[in-house]
Image (cartoon, rainbow, N blue to C red; front, side, top):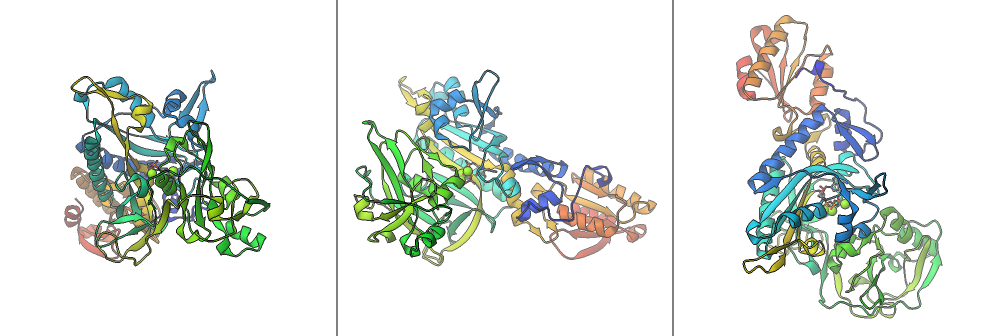
Amino acid sequence: MKLSKMHLKTLREVPNEAEIPSHILMLRSGMIRKLASGVYGFMPLGWRTLRKIEDIIRQEMDSADGQEIHMSAIQPSELWEESGRWSAFGPELWRIKDRHGREFCLGPTHEEIFTDIVRNDINSYRQLPINLYQIQTKYRDEARPRFGLMRSREFIMKDAYSFDRDQAGLDKSYEKMYEAYEKIFTRCGLYFRPVEADTGAIGGSNSHEFTAISEVGESEIAYCEKCSMAATVERAECVDEKPQTDVQMLEMKEVHTPGTKTIEEVADFLGLDQKQTIKALLFVTYDNEENENGYVAAFVRGDRELNMTKLVNALGIPEHAIEFADEEKMAAVTGCVGGFTGPTGIHDCKIVVDSELVGLKNLCAGACKEDYHLLNVNYERDYKGDIVTDIKTLAEGDPCPVCGAPVKHARGIEVGQVFKLGTKYSESMKAYYKDENMKDHPIVMGCYGIGVTRTMAAIIEQHHDDNGIIWPVSVAPYHVIITVMKPDDEVQSQVADSIYKKLMTGGAEVLVDDRKERPGVKFKDADLLGIPIRITVGRGASDGMVEYKMRRDADKVEMTVEESIKKAI
Ligand code: ATP
Ligand code: MG
Ligand code: MG
Ligand code: MG
């Protein structure tokens, strides 16, 4: 491909809206184009890299017995009603109506659709196991789309679903996907850790998040360099099996705290000591079968981060029973980082208590009501019952729970997640198979996601320098860029052309920078685009000499045209 003919616009300046390297570099190198907040299009270079990542994913999914299909992004609400998620999913679900008023959503994920396929097509144990996957566009109306492709509202995901006859089958399918994910992310050039995503009540190995280590990541993980231990920093561990339902609120006082957003501001406003504030006091009201109301509460001290997903997992609350509140709204209401509201049908309820809060009296907490907080919250008085859950922290330097070596902390990007769903969807949506004795059983499911576009961003986060991207060869949009110093010079242009043809014949993907630009501009662009090999054709061309440079190395080497071709293929 000749750069003079390519639709490419690079930017010298850092675009205003971009804060992190991957976002800045993708915009500067003209790979992506913004259409609206969290909505991006792909330009030639970006699209090529994206397809390379997709190819790696396809190859590994296919060798793990995955079968690719392609479903619509538009999903009818009826299927979501069946699974219970139409009402349970929060504002992230992008709902639309057709001209007849029928309701649909733009799929944020496809459990319902794949379960529907399988319940229609599969009836015998003989047809199991199967693994179906797709690489497809997903929609999530994120509260805060940011960082370009990292958290967007339209993004490409690989989602796979496994269907087995029993738990042992699921364990095998899960293991296969886990191994495929390790190969995929390794081939993409990522330094990553599979992190246990559910500890505590649900059990240790139901889900893993594949986390690419990076300062800009939103997850904080504790990991061990000696063994494979990796966990989220805050691990909620359930110590009591029994659900606690006889909680009731007493004597707490609502106070008006207008204009306060964070718990620190509330403490200031009320003249409280930080220790007296609770980061979040969350009530999940629920109806049980006898229509009794109850709630789940979480106490977390003001100076701790609260990971709502972890808490919900630790509580063992079924996903369909929870509606995550708008994060921004909850932050305003409770001064906490996340929250949930309004579930129905939870029959068991537990309380999560940060052990360090036990015994503290007259605390202040969020009231789940705008501009109000609760004063005078007392653990034993306002919440009867035992502490059933404790939140443990794996601090840096703590002994690794597996091998004893000191634990390290790092930030990371969730590029993928594997999850043992069990029979949650097959039971609610009636996906059954018949065994050898014609007896019906719910199909046992797993689901496995990879953020394809987010993976592309994560690769850049790990592979760049001040001058631009440094693509790993496996996902580079082109392997070689031939920079022609003087494209008007007949010898230079002929030498460049012959190198180009020979490299292409050898299977390399090649760009020729034949633009009438100053050499400085061309070198800057070559660095920005991050093409792994640069061959410079300049004055030496008349003696059959060129300059060879790897993007990741500083030094350039003079060599003959033939040598450069041999080296690049
Ligand atoms: P996050 O915790 O970052 O919100 P998630 O846990 O909600 O992600 P999953 O439902 O596990 O995401 O989806 C599978 C994969 O899709 C994620 O591991 C991630 O790589 C990707 N993904 C999820 N949300 C987004 C998004 N808004 N933009 C880009 N990729 C995303
Ligand atoms: Mg999410
Ligand atoms: Mg997540
Ligand atoms: Mg996830």
